[in-house]
Amino acid sequence: MVGRARRVTAGLRAVAALAALGASTLAAACGTGSTPPAPAGSAPAAGVSIGAESVVTVAVVELRTGPLLSGELRAAREATVRAKMPGSVLEVRAEEGQSVQRGAVLARIEARPLQDALVSSQSGVRSAEQSLAVAEREADRTASLVKGGALADRDLELARSAVTGAQAQVADARARLASVRQQLDDAVVTAPISGVLSGRPVNAGDVVSPGTPLATIIDPSSMLLEASVQSDALASLKINTPVEFEVRGYPGQTFEGHIERIAPSADPVTRQVNIFVDVPNTRGQLVAGLFAEGRVTSERRQAILVPATAVDTSGPGAWVLRLRDGKAERVPVQVGVRDDRSERIEILSGVAAGDVLLGGAARAITPGTPVTVTGAAAAPRK
Image (cartoon, rainbow, N blue to C red):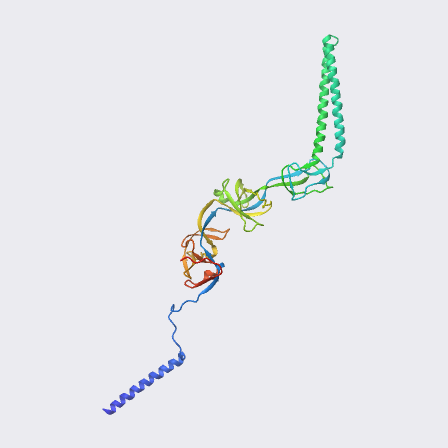
């Protein structure tokens, strides 16, 4: 019995030794002092810091929808002054960009030959008037003699015929005088409307002929936007519909007008329709020739609009990344109208006014990540 007990004790000691050897081998393979990894989600995620430019606070604003347009501004009232007589330009009084009043002298054309014609015409009128006076006296004398029986009625008819001829000569002389005076008036070029001189293609000493442009005057108080709109938007085009647009040279400023006229036909190449927009220009900011882009405001309503960079529409459903309780959370949203001109998207449901959304590169933050906004930014809605 004693021998058997000794053999059992020796066997237990061998098993213990083998167990110790296996434990030491496993420890050597895994590294001394190593610990197994923690279960997923047991450690807090690392936070990120973003600038205020990467967040946007949701707000309800006015949404304006309608077809886009582009075109060029020109003056609603414009006048091109042309020469009415040939001659050399003696002087030019107005300069480009100068304001002029209606009737102001712009230039003078040499009219020296007309002065002699004026004197001759005046003499012709006086001579014809004297001849008429003589013929009238002769007719009166002949009428008295005919009444007394000294002359026949035929003599009175001849006298009256002479009066008629003299009257015609007076009328002809006066017409020639009026023509000369009109030509003299044409030699003095005046402004037909009040406005600003936008062009003056002639200088003193230039020789002009009838029809030569001398000056262009525009009335800057009212401008006209001649723009093109896609023909598929004809249903939105109506007279007096508001139009808003921007022009190069005034970044960030919006101007308004209303549709005054609509072209009756579309362009055969572009299939676009021209519209003419009346634009008040009381402050005189707008000038003719500027390029404009905008839209016909066919509808106005209150809506939630956010920058397109804050909405992901690449998948089957749109979503935004909202900042709530200091963490980013993914929120599915329903989108409406997309305004390509302002690069904004209407949100119909999913977010409310006051929510803070992450946009741009910040939209790539993993949901659940703590987010800190540096700089001036609206507090997230809770």
